[in-house]
Image 1: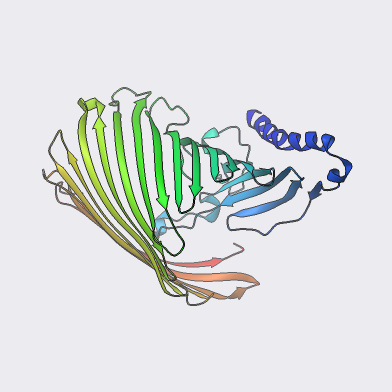
Image 2: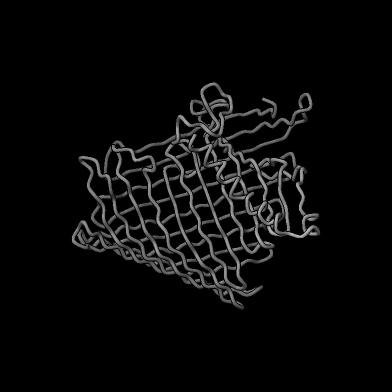
Length: 408
């Protein structure tokens, strides 16, 4: 009942200003008000509810949302029927006021999978852990933009579960410069489970970016955050820390490629260790290259070093990965990715290496009884070596042949 009242409250909030304005508008303005019953173009992951309201002051639309992630495992024992795979369904209400100067958006979504394989109702009141609620308000005044964001999802929700985020931000843009400031909080254990601690983080962020068409974009961002745990169950050590970070980044977009290089300095004070410090440096390169319209390459390189003042240990973590996507036509798709990660510490307590590789070859067959059909060959390989603890090495090689008929 509470969630049904919440939905009705959102509907009245969106419609009442429209009704009040209709009573005060002259007859000529009332002729501009209309209710549209036209199905909009469907986007990926969404399906339109053919209902929208428009007036000289307010425009409101309602749209249903759905999301079902593709299966990523190539191990046969990990596969489940499509009816049991994680998927979500929800409703989004969006409004724009005064010719787009002010916009509001609200969404309620729920896991839509159950043991029977039948889509569940969005207003499942028996299990709030599967639900997500999101609200956003954005305003524009000349070169200044501002807004408030809120999102809360239970621990059983599929996308970004067990997390609440609330943030307010402001952004000013003039010429080639853009200044953005934000403040907010995040925390887990949304459902107040007494067996788990809640980790809450408060942050303040300010950044400036310099961008000009056909020029590289330079940005500088400073972030200050504080982390604290609460509801600590018996046997769990509390956490208290503060951190300051500075990131400088350079990004460029060309005709066939784009790249972003960033360097970060992070200083953390652990209040539970009498303010002991740890210092970290991180460098990251992310790029995308399309030599042809049918081929996309995306390499990623990063290197992170962390020094702990209380132990004197230095932890080094290099990482490299590359992904490939080749789409020769509407019928043939080839994708592959590989990655390597290593973590070592100067005191010898950490020394691990990980190798990961995945590949897929998919081919669209002729329709079967009018339904699109795809056959794919998939393979994956993982190898993790732990040189400090014997017996923790793992290696896995798996493959899968999949035939998908859209109607099944």
